[in-house]
Amino acid sequence: MYLVVFRNRKRAGLDAADYARDATRMAQLAQGQPGYLSFKSYTAEDGEVVAISEWADEASAHGWGRQAEHALVQAKGRAGYYAQYTLFGCAEPRVHRFTTEDE
Image (cartoon, rainbow, N blue to C red; front, side, top):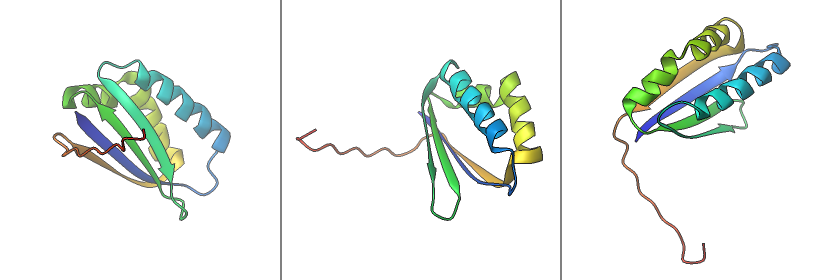
């Protein structure tokens, strides 16, 4: 598994409808990419967003990063959506699981 964590803060005054359209399209497109496993996004009280995607392997995650339509939206994000972001990639995350007997 390859884990990608994308921490970001949006720009004040961004076009929220345009951002939502792009985000929805990127979620749909990512799901069809080889090696895609999952995606979740969380917004903190201070407005920071943490998005986590899981990929089968590093090559799959990098392939998504280079996908043509995604690359265009990444550039659009730097130009108009994000005030700042940090991207973390982890090739061999330690995974610990727990499930109660009730679940």
